[in-house]
Length: 273
Ligand code: C2E
Ligand code: CA
Ligand code: CA
Ligand code: CA
Image 1: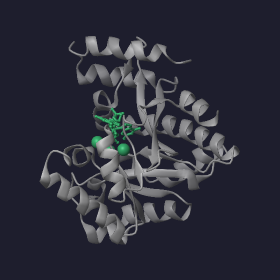
Image 2: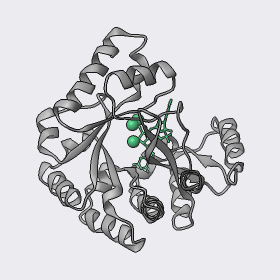
Image 3: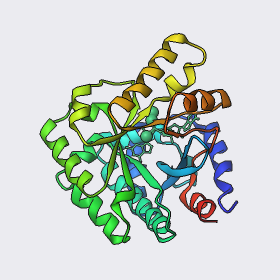
């Protein structure tokens, strides 16, 4: 594949990951990477229970000065702490808007999902920023999904509600990520324009080995039905998990069993071929 060099880089990264890099050094390096196309949008397909691609989740990768691909766990928390996530997320979103435009041009109504940090979502100009970036690419906002975490629901309720409503009116769907692992206020979920719950991979993966997790997984799937929202199971790795989720009414599946995240250009060329 065109981007096969990326895999080698990832392996190299694993070898050096023990070296000591301080947060301050990472901050300096992240700052220096802004505006240079070093924050890349990788996409992982979301499929229906027949394995048909319905969209993808955007997962950020940092290509650092040394050309190594750094996974988000190693830089997102630092980027959030220093507010660098705000400009970084704009770079990611513009790649997502490009992808959405390409899809809609071909008549595909796939949704592309992005992860949003609370600090980014709570910016005064968040709605305008999302609108502007999509307008720049002439991309339809009604193919954008925004994955939020349950802890955002603990922030200023009026701001959260207003921002969500404004975006929902533009066709954006909100999804609750890592559902089941955080603080869940079901009343709140019902009041907000939430269209999707993403069941955390812990439940998906442990259901077949642990009765308690199985019970929780089934309860969460039932809950999505009661709330009339769609369900996405994440971290699907085995055929047993696929069968279980299909039999119990999950709407969409995402995981290594179907696809790994790949650079958006590779994802697009596969999707449009
Ligand atoms: P997440 O939103 O829960 O994303 C799913 C993570 O699970 C991704 O890790 C994905 O590669 C991984 N994954 C997918 N399928 C499987 C599977 O079958 N098995 C296993 N074991 N893992 C699977 P990744 O890409 O390393 O991202 C980690 C986290 O970083 C994300 O978790 C999300 O919280 C955060 N993140 C990624 N991109 C962004 C971004 O653009 N903005 C923000 N704020 N956070 C991001
Ligand atoms: Ca996510
Ligand atoms: Ca997740
Ligand atoms: Ca997660």
